Length: 114
Length: 114
Image (cartoon, rainbow over all chains, first blue to last red; front, top):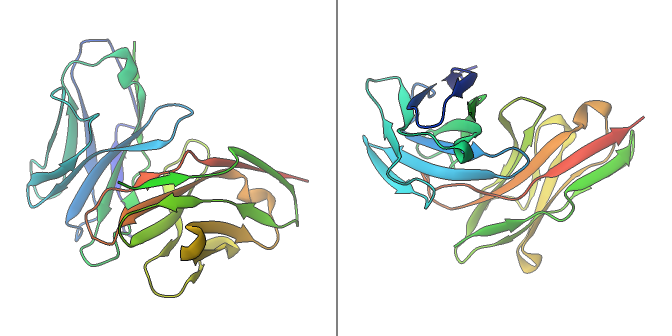
C-alpha cells in the first residue's frame, strides 16, 4: 500500500543552524502539508502546498520556514535558523484530490534543537 | 474558524469494556470530521472519517463514530476494548474542501487495563 515517507526519522541540531526535513508524498496526491507536534501537545497545522505554491499557512509559519517541491517526488520543509522552541515532531501529509480531504500522514521527523 | 474539543485527556478502561472517547467541534461551515490514532513513536493513522454521507461511520479495528449535528459531536466508540487499543486518539475537523487544513483536538490517551 502506498505510504508517505519522511527522512530523517531523527534530527539533532544546534540552535541557529538550518535544517531541511524531507518528505515523499504518495505519488498521485496533489495536496501536501506540514504539521508539527510539540511533545505532549496537539498536532498543529503549519502549511499546505498545491500546484507548486503555498495554498495556506498558519501563524506559526513565519519567515524562518519555507517549503519546496524541488522535483516530482520530494516535498521539503526548511527551517532557516532553528530555535529551541522548534523542537517537535514534524509530520508530512498528502491528499488525493476529491478524496474528502483524507490526509495520509508520514511517520514524522523528530527534531531536537540544542 | 473551526475548533475541536476532546473531553478527557486520559481515559482508562478494562479489557473487554466499552470505549467512549468524546469529541465536540465548532464550525461555521459543514465539516468533515476525522479520528486518528497515534501509537507510541509513530505517525497518525486514520481510523475513520465523516464526509456528510451516513451519520454512523465505521472504521478500522472495530471503531465507529456517530455524527450528531444537533450536539456538534463526533464521539468515538468501540464495544469491547483490546489491549492493543492503547494509544493516543485525535479528533480533527476540516471544511468540506480538499486541500483544507485539519484542526486537531488536544488528544485523548487511552489506557486499557487487563
